[in-house]
Length: 531
Image (cartoon, rainbow, N blue to C red; front, side, top):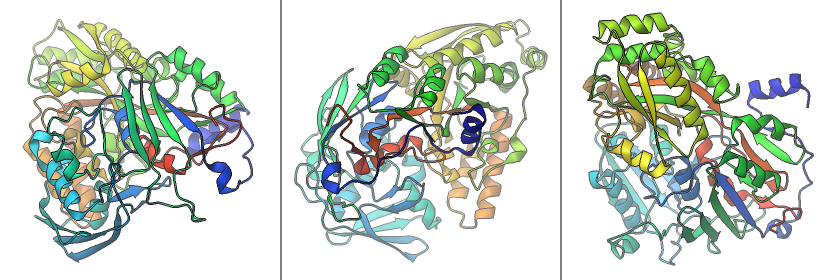
């Protein structure tokens, strides 16, 4: 592939394919085989209604079903929902499929949907979608297959469908949950295309084909095609790359950026390069020195985003010098006015520190995942940048699970994070930055700014899209001014899969971590060593 063609592919976001596609095969030839899917993190033991990182989303998506789901084109379609009706502006009616059962054989009923949404709304669950779904007044079962959603205020129906398509909105079995009061997550009971079979902590999660799955392909053949999936965590990038090159892995969430050029040139692999996730700094705004807005603004001027893009991501990243909505051209809430609000300006950073009462800088530590080279490399740049303005910063490394716990508990001064929007509607912001969330590692610790929360709440219940856009723009302006979070770069994911993997692709926009929902359509050809 020529450099010119490669650059054109990157700009258009098209999948880089360095091989010739095989002709279509009979359905019988698609069945069978075990797909090995890897991540840069160890796969955790998750509560499916909580969010602990992309690895958790990837392993949960094939196990559980939701009322609606994304397609690989980013549109929202029915999943468990057979029909969706707007009875009136504050009442939605969902009719369920009648052919769905949980993996333990229990039929899925409307009462399970009611249970699942009530569990999300329970503060004890710690569900990520609680703040967004707080618009619900009550959820009522009407018979076995009809669910009524009563709303406190009217919301855009398209928003409701998308929020219910989130992987963190799975439908759980009330009967099974009642039988597991001390659930430790080593067992899972969904209704998705794959059954949770075994979990080996720190090694892998093993899924097997659900023979009673309710979906069929266009020719009437029951999905999924695969016999099983193994989710394997490789925290060491060279080992993960070696496993891909040896054919021991079929799909990889993303390859360390220093190896991407090699895989793009490899005729035996397919590379996805969506610009789907961003890196950011999260502050604990309740402790010095970051309880001072001027200090946070100083950091925003002190960080050389180009250095982050080059040193941590080998050029596969776009610097962010402003509000996050200013760097999402795929969103209808795209806000170009908040682009380039900052610049790399160490002298400006020193001036702000002096105004804040820190003319000689300060000493602190940055919480960083020990399992992610991109986090370590990004923190390394930050440490050097802050040293240039008189600050003494050390890197505090913690393995991913502990790092998440420290973030949830507010046990840090500032931290490096990385995530993506996870939904196309700009209400994704409330899932990360709503002050009322509390105890969530992506939300700045001790963050309490009612005016910003009110803007998010109002936008959610505003039906006119232009009015909603204006509210999100106001929020974005306040975010840039207050700086409880500083956005650094948008990174390209660099997902890699073998040539023998078919029917799988990364979802667009900020939906990349939902891509494993498409594994029900994935199949392996005969060249795969595991078929």
